[in-house]
Image (cartoon, rainbow, N blue to C red; front, top):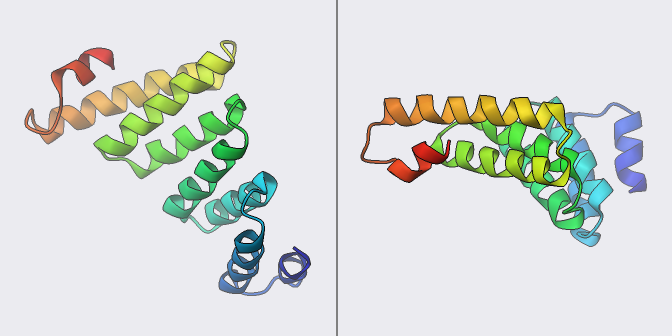
Length: 136
């Protein structure tokens, strides 16, 4: 963790910072705050797949945090594609189940469902289950 903090403070190349954090997380895989730091780092450099993976690890450590589920859903929605939009919808719904007053999750679920319906219409009927469209 110290190597990562030094690399970040010295404003080294992004690869060096990620490498230092990866080394730390390789030794401390259960550190949810370390994974969240990785998520923030990946988002800073627009690596959405890496950010999604890091947030998945955070969800494993903090499954009852509605904000983490919402953030993960936002990353999946940003990635796009039917499969990612289904995952985004699932995590938005989980966020709402954990905290029904989460306005961001409420609006996010509507937005993701709309985006899913739009993508499924453009993809054609062969890839989309009709039940999934009804649920959205």
